[in-house]
Length: 210
Image 1 (cartoon, rainbow, N blue to C red):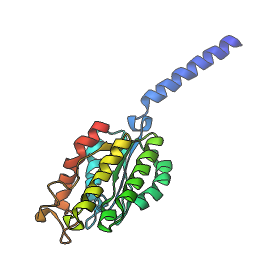
Image 2 (image 1 turned 180 degrees about the horizontal axis):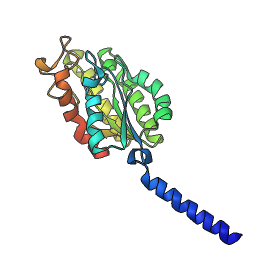
Image 3 (image 1 turned 90 degrees about the vertical axis):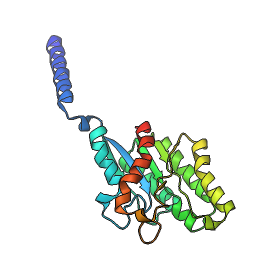
Image 4 (image 1 turned 60 degrees about the horizontal axis):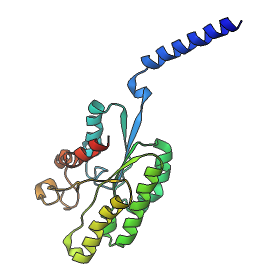
C-alpha cells in the first residue's frame, strides 16, 4: 500500500510539473506596473490609446511580456487624492512597480510644498511597504509662482527620493513644455504628437527598475 501511495504521489508531482511548464509565461509570472498620475498620464484631450501610458504598455508587451500596465491616472488629481486612492489600488493590483506622476496640480493651486512632500513621501512608503519599486517623476511649475515657492516645490521630489528607496526620474515634459507646437492650446497639456516623446523621456529610468 505504501509503495502504491509513493508511486501515485511521484506521478502526480511529475504531472504537475509538466502542467506548470506548459503554462504560458504570462500565467506563471503576471506582474503589474501601476501608473498613478494626473492629466499628463490620463491622456487629457485625446483617446487613452494615444497617451504615453498606452504606448508604454505596447512597448512592454514586447520587451517585458510578463508585465501588465494599469493606468490609474485621473485628470486634476493631486497628491492628496492619490494618497487616498493608493491603498485600494495596491490591494487590488499588487504591483511590482509604481510610477508616481503627481504634484503638478498641487503646485498650480499653490498647495504648501511641505504638504506635497508629505503626501509623496507617504505614497512612496506605502508602495514600498507593499513590495513595489517606485519611480517618482518630478514636476515643474511656471516661474510666476516666485523663486522661493518654485524652488521648494522642485526640492520636494528630490527630498522624497532621498528619504525612501524611490528612484527619481527625469522631468517627463522636458523639451516638450517649452515647445508650443507640442502643447495643446491651454499651454499645459501635451499634444498627441508629443506622447512618444514623453515616453522617451522616462523609459530609460523605468527600464532600470524593471
